Length: 603
Image 1 (tube, rainbow, N blue to C red):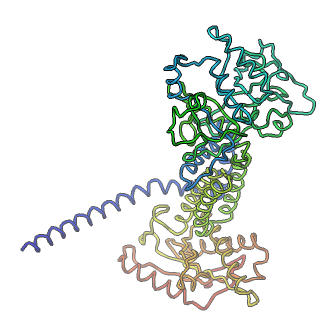
Image 2: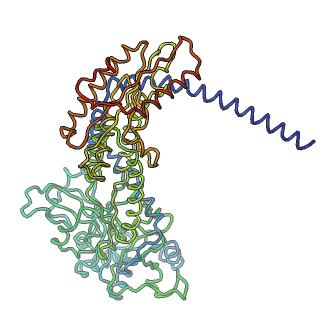
Image 3: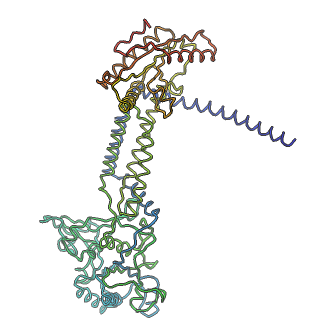
């Protein structure tokens, strides 16, 4: 009894789902007809002009985006961030650069020792330089600005200035480029600015420049810019190495440290670099308190200090209350670490290489034109879809391998995505053309036996010449089918049976050289006239696109007519008659070569 009840419930559910599914399909089909027939009407008017018009619109957007927001480049930046986070391994630091951080522990320890909180006295900074100098460092860069003398510590000011003067350019202090609006009132010229160098052999333009410099003369003379620039989305990916002012450039702190202030070396450097952002393997760090005291204050006693001899050291604050954390692809990063990573990239040659910014736009434009040409010639084979997917996968793998192993990032993903969208629009429009050509009821009026009393069916077959080799025949057949699709999809009265579509099976291969075109009319004469007109047009189309058509083969035609019957025929009877005449047509041996004039009155 229980099983019988479950069976009845199951049957009721199956019946209800079947009714709902049938109702949904009917309503969905009616909805599709409402907008698909509009598409088909537009396609009949535009025909193949749609593809060059779409190409002009897409190329226009690319040109506008290049001149304005460069959203394509912004999309590439977002993809870069994802790949940086997902790569399985990342490069280890070269250990040529060390970060000395003024962290919470160092500030708190100095406060407990009676040295006061932040900001530290200039004497403490001078003591830190002295410790680093005695350790044999190559150079020291300060991501701390000393803009004004200290009224409470004039001796410390003098000591720090003396250290800068005696450092012979090894100790570099931070300065800031002010907004260009302040340049007009500045007495400082670009050629006189610290760490400046000419961008050409004979600079002519030497404008005024406004800088926020350290208070001491030696400190100001041995200073470089701390300015960084974020991307449009607020993320810092590329670190500028210079600020151009007229025909001169002002070096950044990383560039000055890496080149030792050599003007020729600085001029040979790029305008900016993209850091190989690390999320797991950080640069060597040391707390300022540990160096100043020579004891393990902010580290474990078992943890050794990083080696300092011959290293380039960046000093800056990382304390939470002071930290100028910047968003990077590796997450929030202290400003001093950003400058240290840029210095590391210059010294170790670990910067990421990217192609020129215009390449992605040029690539997108070329692919757009190739896609347009492919669809304009006639709907391409569906294998092209597989090519798009495979290309994207190959590029994704290449990006991972290139970025992880070779520090090379080909930022063309957004360009490929844009072209894929363009390809999809072309495929969608070609689908509308195909839907109408094959008689899909969503795109054209449904066959009505009461109105369409007579069917004219033409078998169009490609017959190759005997001298065509098998491989040449395969290529010729594919090209013939493409040209046939272009003619039929352009908007005919004929309905095309899908024998023209490539399917990789033996059954479709047996019919790959055969296409059936069907015309419907109220009488035989009208159907014959429509078939004659469009067969004549097919001959003109094939000859116009291939003058050598008779040299590799010819197109043969067989014709058949079917009278549907009574004004109100039985649906199944109509289907049986159409199948019968179609079978007869496919087996028909009498055919004639397609010609400029295909008279059907005597056939």
